[in-house]
Image (cartoon, rainbow, N blue to C red; front, side, top):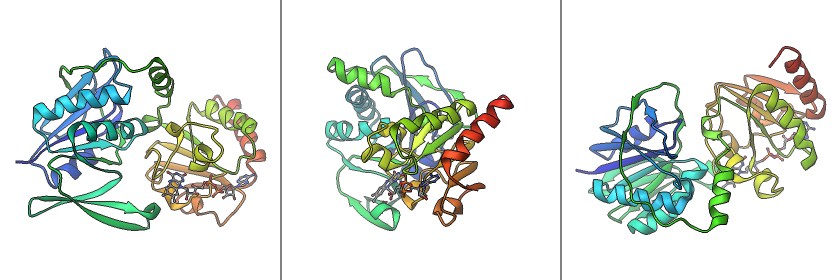
Length: 305
Ligand SMILES: Cc1cc2nc3c(=O)[nH]c(=O)nc-3n(C[C@H](O)[C@H](O)[C@H](O)COP(=O)(O)OP(=O)(O)OC[C@H]3O[C@@H](n4cnc5c(N)ncnc54)[C@H](O)[C@@H]3O)c2cc1C
């Protein structure tokens, strides 16, 4: 019997990950990684629902050591982590600790003569690679949605916590934990259409008037370095499914679209009427963000959000 542990953060929906795991596993446990004192409720049809809740788990090395203990005592041979920025940081230390093979952004699994095969997107999503994973234990990431229903309380399990790491590492993790992209109900995301870092105040103003979190495209993180990777939406960032996604000055390349196209309502603001973002938008404004965003923000403020 192959056992699997699906790992999520509070507010993430394990449903698609459980379906993926069940294609190759007979017994699936959903495990929620929480902060101290939290006791999450999760809607899930997994065979077991557990949570680990302790201070320090926001640091990837500490979480990895705790998860490795749970995986060993469960006897799981497959660990599926929701593809959030935070859980992706756990993959490397967890795989090293379990001497496991690791694969990111998996879209399908199969069992071929006892060997686990994983399909993952390649070249930014234009091709699919199938990997035969020979190791006994496999750790992988796959996209998860946002939880919409309240479910059963998870059974709290004890974990052994590793020694706390350096102070700086801990401080960074706590600061970045404030970004709640995977669970945000509303998101205002911006891209290279924004000309300078100071202009981010336009985006912040719109986000504040909507009660939204701020997301961005990859160049804002990697080229401009204006925001941390926790804000990045897309293939190599976070997959989001908010009720409202406002894309400001984002062209909508496939690597961005795969991370946000399942949002309920998508609004795009772009000067280029041929920008691919309009192909997934429910509402499109062809216009200059420097004119449209301030007008939208004041209109929202006038009617109280
Ligand atoms: C392996 C791989 C993984 C990747 N992963 C990701 C990922 O996770 N997330 C991601 O986002 N990208 C990712 N990318 C990058 C992706 O291919 C694009 O390069 C990126 O999404 C483009 O970002 P952008 O839309 O901000 O910039 P651009 O493509 O430069 O688009 C800027 C847009 O702003 C518009 N604009 C300009 N001025 C204005 C104005 N005044 N008002 C309104 N609109 C304006 C333009 O018309 C244009 O459409 C990845 C690429 C690869 C190869």
